[in-house]
View 1 (cartoon, one colour):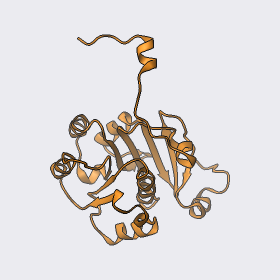
View 2 (cartoon, rainbow, N blue to C red; view 1 turned 120 degrees about the vertical axis):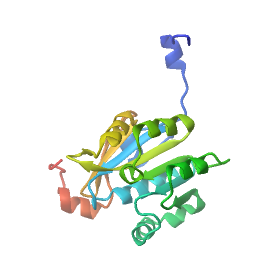
View 3 (spheres, rainbow, N blue to C red; view 1 turned 30 degrees about the horizontal axis):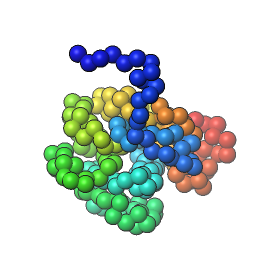
Length: 208
């Protein structure tokens, strides 16, 4: 049996956090480099572009693997990468196509594998919650970002909902605006494309 922690033990504990700044700090605070973040929303509202923009920012803190199960290497993914100027971050961002969960694990077991993993999407990977827990357990020093479709403004499916509840931060995307809720503070929305977000929401965001 492990020793119970005192208040001093808890308050003196150190965690490996990322010093986010600007709009990303306003949205997420200073998140840990490990655990899970969920991005979800309806199709054609900006999820992929937000995931690309977030991935681009994360390259300041390590390497990002975009696990493109849903679209693979496609024209739409190519266009999103061009639109978000991912070439600026060079080899700190890499993409894999329609691989299996076992192939993902094999990649992550390699020396100097990426620090952050974007899974697009939970539904197309057909990920079970038990598999999610094993992935989290085997790679405790990585941060996983799961992209999910939604149903009734919540992640679609039992596994996606359980991952959502286990996440340290979640971000719902609608109308090219991302609405984060983070255990690290922040919680201010981010416009994925300001013009399109204002066209959808108006100036005062009074529809959310």
